[in-house]
Length: 155
Image 1 (cartoon, rainbow, N blue to C red):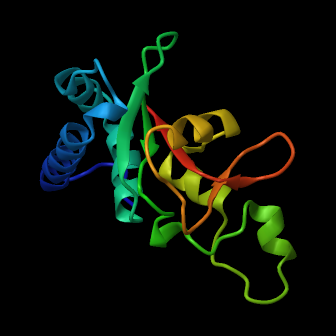
Image 2 (image 1 turned 135 degrees about the vertical axis):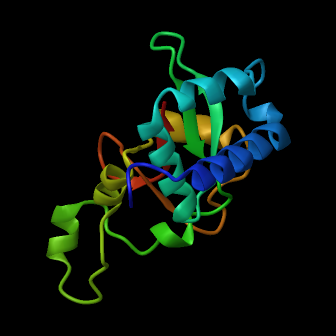
Image 3 (image 1 turned 90 degrees about the vertical axis):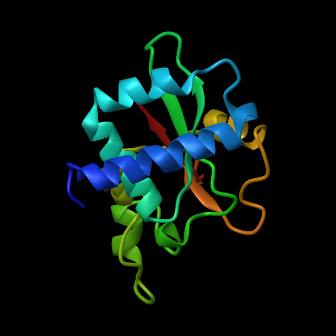
């Protein structure tokens, strides 16, 4: 995917993100869309990552503000793992160890290509407090002992 979005892609992405932000206001109480959009406009590489999440079937939405870094937290709030990110191994090592029915990619590599990070266990649990997610599918997350699934993003 191209790192720079066309003006039309930017406009469509901002429209989608704003609409989602307004529709799901309980996920980000006290946050103002105008501030978030201004920060995104100042960091076009962040828009690429959000666009990549959308392109793979995700629904990135603001879930908070990191008061230490000043970064807005975007998590993928799709009800189920996006179709464009299913049937993958956790990382390159797991991918290479598959003998049959080898997936095309791994969750770690896909996240890196999109410029995002997998959620950790604490972040994934926080996401679960915001709604019903992964009731029928599973998502990769990073844990101290073993991988599961979840997609996050910080801007």
